[in-house]
Length: 344
Length: 284
Image (tube, rainbow over all chains, first blue to last red; front, side, top):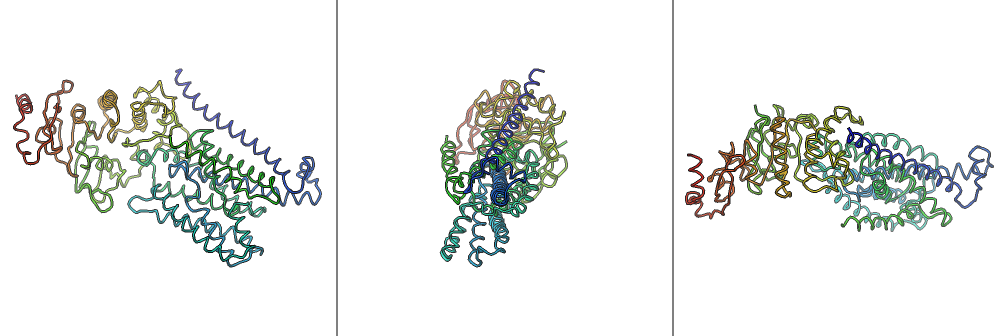
């Protein structure tokens, strides 16, 4: 009987820890959110912000908060969540802690379609603002689809190793093509492109929030409902089969969800990498390997990281250093640290 | 009654068939062991039985149903497998990993039910892991880890257990420990056990039924008494075996052996005094 109690206690212990970590993260997000509201070229006092939030602000204060800063921050939160959960799912599918949405061609595909678009249209037209995320999404999903088809083998289906290698090869090809196309752009367009590729959260408008939100609202609960399947996939192919997981079907469905989350995110934020790699990894350090906890917590970690990166980017230079660059500056050393640790 | 019927299967990678037109029956409630030299196709056979590999032709039947056609979750309720290279994420505890054995019975996000806990607790208990159940898998020794995997397979609550070299990489005592556990599961619960073993003497001591393979074909099958003969071992492993009786099971065991020289192969057994002595005791 005593062991029985201890068992239950230990199971509850992990759940308790996950809740504690989540509450802390939400708390941190709220703090950063308010600091971030205050960060920008025009300074607003905390009192002014609270007044403005409660519809007591001047026209200029309204404009800054509701049209510039708030949508941008909400986008940062959503994109961070989407990329992090996408990364967590991918790491589960390929059973490699170093996987990131980049390996299934998300960033390369989105980048390529944006370049193609810029080669033919001007950036400034209204239609381009609506069309671009749409095309970026198609490019990202298209690249992922090509990688999937190329790594598919009829006898074995999709094997993680082939998926990763094909992903690297296709991304390299797309990047080469992008350089060729870049040479043809005029300087202004090039500047826009460079900022886009660096992950500038350029789609800072409420309409992008509305475009992104449905993807997250549908896919995150779905992925969460597959938490147990991801736990099982983590045990390896043969064990998963033995436990009765329909490997091919589950992988396809989960891969499609990860692509949907990452492509939708990147289409409004520009090419942000590393969040999908770092956030799930930090999460595993905090709450362990069980996907019931990894999925929601990595979403929170991703949201916090990108919100913070965006704020830092606006803080150190006006108008801004793209959030993607801040993430990379933090992410690259962390990645190296991970590699060094994985060796032993 | 046969649990598993393998009917004229062709199995292979890419364009090269490893197993051609192989048929065999695995008896219910018995321990069956597949033996054979490296590359003989024993792992391929057991992986096909476990539905890890697909057949190119023929079929495998579990209790009369074709395993590659029935819903894989339904198969998982009747047959559990322990792959050769099972690897657990380090952060999991013993109890958590064993609880994954209930996956085939879960629907969606549903949490574990009372019945699930009963199975898990029983599996923890019968494999002697009660003391370490809350430890991380990464903190366990190889022998304990193998027990955890067996416990996970047991939590699946299946009548049939398929194990691919469950004793490889374990030291002598831990090898025996795993086999005694399997023997107990067979004796006390009547579970059908099918496994691949490299150690002939373990195979002979613990099996009711043995299948000897070479070059993707079944050379011979039957009781250890029927399979563990000089002539068979020569044909399967190209060895000249000195056989004796196992003091524990009274089944034939291989005391020591020489490699057969190809040209002398036919003379191999007859000139061997030790095996002659064995055959005398066997017949007398």
